[in-house]
Amino acid sequence: MKKLLLAILGVICILAGIAGIVLPIIPGWALIFFGLSFIAPKLAERLKRRFFRKFFKKDIIYLKEWEKFSVRAGFSTKHFPLILKKTDDLAQPENQRQFKQVVPGGSFVFLDQPHGSRVAVLEDGAKYASAGFYQLPDADGVLTNLAGLTLLALTADCLPIFLCAKSRHSEKADWIGIVHAGWRGTKDRIAETAFQTLLSKSKASPADIRIIFGPAIRKDHYEVGPEFRKPFGKKFVRKRKGRFYFDLAAQNRKQLMRAGALDQNILDLDICTVCENSDFYSFRKEQDSAGRIISLITKI
Image (cartoon, rainbow, N blue to C red; front, side):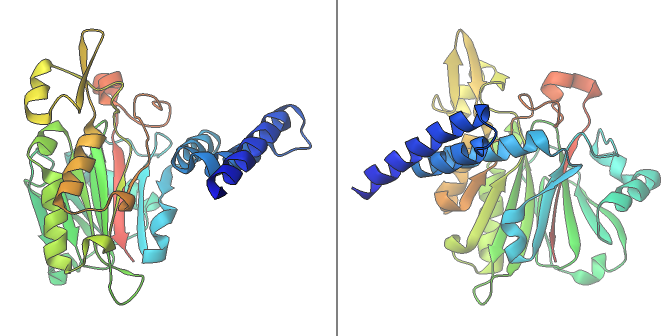
């Protein structure tokens, strides 16, 4: 009975919202989102995020969901003033200078990203005590319990995965991490490795680990060959009109849940680098002219 009443209320709000688009005295979009939240809450959240991205052009989109854990996390857009095209660009002093003008922090760690499955663990604060940029060789993922150390990953279709292990004794995070998951790293289960390592290092329960998927190429645009079906399966490599399309995000979600992650603790922002190419770089669409999305996370 309660579900039926909520559904009726949701429909009423949606209809009022549609009327409000025509009649300016009624807050149309607000009512539509409000009504959808009763009927299809997950869809409402996805649409709301996409709607607001269209109207608020920012150089970095920060993840408000993790502020309560004392974690600053986010990713750059095409409005970011510095264009990077490869990880080595962060080793250039001039790029570092420009980067620090926009992004707060003293010590930054960026991944070498050879499209592998190695996840580095940073625990020795003395190694990163001096302000500057540190490159991690042969790593596509990194975890740390060090406060003030900003972890960086660069992508332009691959999936950036943010991880956060909440403390058992407070709302603050004990550990954070970031993973660059391309199809090769996904094949080698890098997300699964990162989650299991985070569990071991943080001593947290799976219920205390939160995960967010950032911008990436999505299943309707990630065209691959039929050979992808062998490692990933038909469920994640769909055939459509004689072509094959890989669901990178869904495959990583599956691996994380197999490792112990809770489905409700995985937030997919549902940002497609191809669909939203005016705001996010896509190598598939732009080829060599594509810059890189900079994903960042810091334990404050």
